[in-house]
Length: 172
Length: 152
Image (cartoon, rainbow over all chains, first blue to last red; front, side):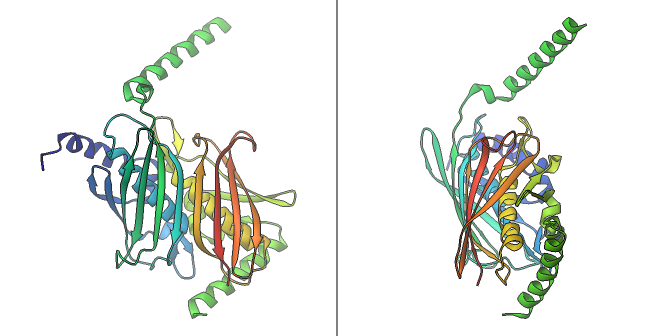
């Protein structure tokens, strides 16, 4: 297979954006595999996200966050250009509770990429990939707009700043 | 029932009893570490429970908008649905989530998210709950969720 330069360039950006900012940083996961339309990650056991304090089982909501992130990453890698891919819907089936104290492995794959919608499926497991904790299907909108490029966001912010300053001047 | 389940049930029942006595669903949230991780809170609003999630940097998903992480909204709604069952129904067990389906309607802006839940059906084995989330006004929903919990 030919060397995928675009993917190689995007990979560190995606890793940085997902692992180091906001909720991704709070959860603390590791993106292991980033391929086009295919992402795997590992989530080490984290006591802050326990749902049942007696058994120590992590809360189902964490699995929602992780699978949403994992599927979202897969959606972005299937585009590899400045786009936003908001989630339209996400459906999760829980097979069995996670074993406390053990890492959770997750993977997601885009199985259909149309002009407007990206279809993705993902699963979460611990010991055995064939015996998952949960699996999910998610659909993402494709908003392939120039308005969402980094340069345009900075430009808009700057304009807003200037018009705000002008409005203040006229008030005085 | 395993020992762990029985121990959970005893601990949860004590918390629920106290929460109902004080009309404070927040006490159940305080019992669950995940709720303080995302910052979920609850109070009585008339005869309904109102859940809310104040904005915090660790819940951001898209820093450029900025928008709340979709997974946080999902986790918050699932948590709210479970608390709704524990606080309002007498199920005699800790509800286990079976499936969870979430529709995103609008981006979650970087401000407080409110949620309310409705139990659509309580059966012997399953409970069906819907949860809706909004920010500016309850008729402008940002997400709706529907989940099944096993209660037997």
